[in-house]
Image 1 (cartoon, protein in one colour):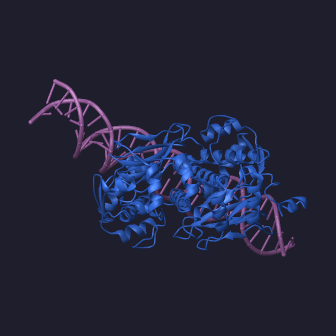
Image 2 (cartoon, rainbow over the protein chains, first blue to last red):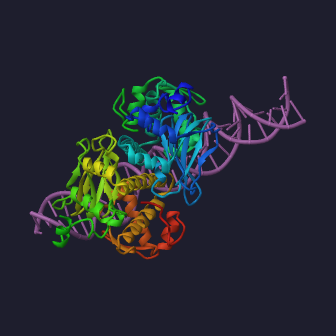
Image 3 (cartoon, chains in turn orange, cyan, brown, red):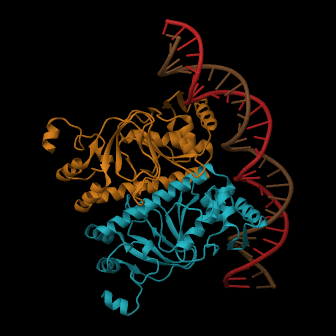
Length: 248
Length: 248
DNA sequence: CGTGCAATTGACGTGGCTCAAGTGGTGTGG
DNA sequence: CCACACCACTTGAGCCACGTCAATTGCACG
């Protein structure tokens, strides 16, 4: 079955370009086949479509294959709080495992492909494949870590530092995925960036404008080009280029 | 060995009052004994002592037995960012599993007893005991969840709402542990509360004063008594008493 | 009884929010 | 193919919640 599918050039973990960022990392061929066999890959999701909604029963975790998505929660007042932007290789749904129901929403920011991983099957498989179990723990740990760093960012840094950090974080994440670290397209709106960083649209817009005026970046709508990463790192409060962003 | 220790009234998971909040939850007797056998329980930590520091190699996770601790990280500018206050039953160190080095610091806020759980042993044991594996995942998931909720709090709620939420969160956590939910002692300073919530000491102090003047609470140094929980929930932006704080 | 940190309180300044108006790009229907 | 509607985004003006700075008090510990 796995040979068959590989011969047919089917999508699978073995031939997935970002498998070393994802669940299959460190798995041997036979374990990867087992994992493959429980994963479902469906039609793409279009911008605005949700993978799941808060309080839906937890069925699957999702791994991003292409495109990008946002995770968010609604507070008691019904306001959205974006908690993450997901790029290829990212896993979605860890925050819901403890409760058996999804704790928030996941929504495509653009046309995106995801791998659906039925949680019960993954749970069983992780009991048989120690390296899979360890990788799940690593990924969850990294997410905890990233959340805590983000927390530090929004509680104590200026708007300017937050936006600069955001730009560098994206840069670093694109780089890890084999894309340019200096030129990329934002799949999220200014308003979504602001929501994520605890700022208003206006502030985000003004700061991007300011960075452009200072020749640190070039912005054209959703397209961003970093001209002076070193300076941006400084503003972000990070050690200068190559500024080590410690995160998942 | 386990019978022996239980007969001798040694400290162990079986007789631990908060084991249902902790790792042993759902473990059968024999599994709990296995867990017990890898756990080390040492002398108490005094206020200001650290369990571990950032970049130390990851040796153990810690479970709080009594007392309380804070977790924090230092950003590149060397400023402290408190990411959690830990009460009995809480596990400490999940954010470091992915990196094999501790990602931050854990420090006692008062004289505290902790159970030290060597990570390599726990990892192995979790491969043999499915219910332990699941409980670890649940606890990690709950931590992710709590972090994301905290993020929502600091990015979008007023100082007043943050302090009110903090008071209710503590109330709920004390209640779960069998303590009074309306009267408790803060083991952290105003400054630590402010750091955690993204506020200054002065703001925290003023708001506690304001709540007192409005007869919502009674504050006396570190002692707090909630007089009108319902109103505090409202200010926190939560549905009124018993206000369901969704968190770990 | 003195030293030092925690907490309170007041006066003042400001970074980022609010409100408002205007621009630009994109998809849609006539 | 154009006109219109709808957003996303930008830009400006004004304001206010919270931070900053400073002085004082309270309290724990040696």
